Amino acid sequence: MLRPSIVTQPVVPARPLLLAALAVVLAAPVAAQTQDPERPVLPEQRALRAFVSPTQLTLLGERRAVFTAVHALSGQELWITDGTAGGTRLLKDILPGFRGAYPSSLTPYRGRIYFAATDGEHGVQLWRTDGTERGTVVVTQLPGAPGSDGALPAELTVFKDALYFVAKEPDGGFQLWKTQGTAQSTVRVAAIAPGSRALVRQLTVVGDRLFFTATTAEHGHELWVSDGSAKGTRLVKDVRAGPEDGGIARLTAVGRQLYFTANDGQHGTELWTSDGTAEGTRLVKDVRAGDAASQPRHLTAMKGVLYFAADDGHHGIELWRSDGTADGTRLVKDIQPGPRGSLSSPMAVMNGRLYFAATDGESGAELWSSDGTEAGTRRVADIAAGASSATPSRFEVAAGRLWFSAGDAMHGVEPWSTDGTAAGTRRMADVVPGAAHSMPVGFTAVGDAVLFTADDGHGNERLWRIDRAGRLSLLGDPLQQRLR
Image (cartoon, rainbow, N blue to C red; front, side, top):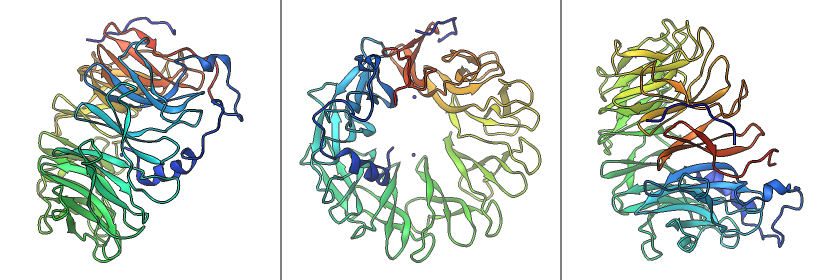
C-alpha cells in the first residue's frame, strides 16, 4: 500500500472537429530547422527528457504506458515510460522538427496502442505502436478530404473483434470505420449520410451493440446503432421528430441497457434509455415535470444501476438513481436540504461505492461516498475544515485506492488518495510546496508506482511518480523556467 512520507523536490478521446482545426497547422510543410525560429530555446530545454504537458497516459501491458508530450525540439510526439526516469523516453519522432505529429485518441487494442497523428505529408491518419520505434507505423492511408487535413480518425473504440473509429471522407463528412490493424481490414462500416453534413460521434459499446449519434438531413443529430455490418447499422429512433437535433449526449452503458440524455421538444433535457429498438427507446422519467429540464449529468454505472446528478426543481442538483423505470428513478439523498443543491463533480466507483464532491451546506465541497441508499450516503472526510472547500476532483482508481486532486487549508490543490475512510484519506505529496497549486490529473498505476501530471511550480506540466513508500519523484529533466 502506498504510504505518505517526507519527500524533497528533485495525468469525452479527441473529437473530429478539434482534429480538423489542428490538422491544418500540423500538416503544413516542415521547416528545415529543428527549432521554432520565433521561440528561443534555453539550454535546459534541450535536455533529452525536458518534456512538458504529458497527456493521455495509456497502459501498454501492465508495466509500461504510452503518452503524448511536448519537447522544445520535437514538438508534441509519442513517449513511453516504464514508471522510472531511465525508462522514460521519446518513442518516435513521427514528424521531425518542432511542429510535432500531435498524437491523439490513444486506445489499446490487441496488445498495441492505436492513435491518430500526422507525418506532415498525409494529414492526420490512423497509427499504431507496439512500444518500439520500429513498430510505430501508420495502419493505412485513409482517403480523407482533399488538402492537408487527412482522415482525422477519432472516437477509437474497441467493439467485438475490431477497432471502430470515425474518419473524414473525401466529401467532407465523418463516417463510421473499423479495422483489425491492417490496411486490408480497414473498411468503412456504413455511409450514414452523404456530404459534409454527415457527422458520427459518441461511440459507446453496450453488450453486442455499438451505439452512436449521427447527423442526417431528414432527422438531425439522433441515436444510431450498429452490429458492425452495413446492413445492421441503422437509426434507432428520431427522438426529436423532424430535422431538429435531439440533443443526445452522455451515452452510458449499464449492463445491456443504454442510458443517455435527450430533449424531445416537450420535456426538456431528461434521462432516456434504449435497448436498440425504436419501441425500447423512451423517456425514463420526467424528473423536472413539464418543458423544464432536470439536466441529468455525471451518469455512472454501479452494480447494474445508473447513478446521476439532476435538478428536479425542488432539491437543486442532487444524487439520483435509476433502474430504467419511472418508479425506480428516485432521489438518493438531499445532501444539502432545500433548492440549492449539493453535488459538484463527476463520480467514480471503487469497491461498490460512489465517490464525488458535494456540500451539505455546513462544510464546503468535500469528499462524499454512497452505496446507493440514503443511509449509506455520507461525507468521507472534511479535508478543508469548516466552510472552506477542498473541491476534490479528477478521480481515478489506481493501486487499490481512489486518487484525486484537492486542497486543504495549508496547501494548494495537490494529489490525495483514500481507501474510503476518513483515517485513510491523506495528501500524498506537496508537489509545489505551500499554498501554490500543482493541479494533479491523470493518476495511473504503472508498475509499482502511480504516475500523474502536475505543475512543477514554474508553470510546466510534468510527469511525476509516487512509489509504494510514498516517495515523490520527477520523471524527466528538471526545468527552472516555463517552456513557452
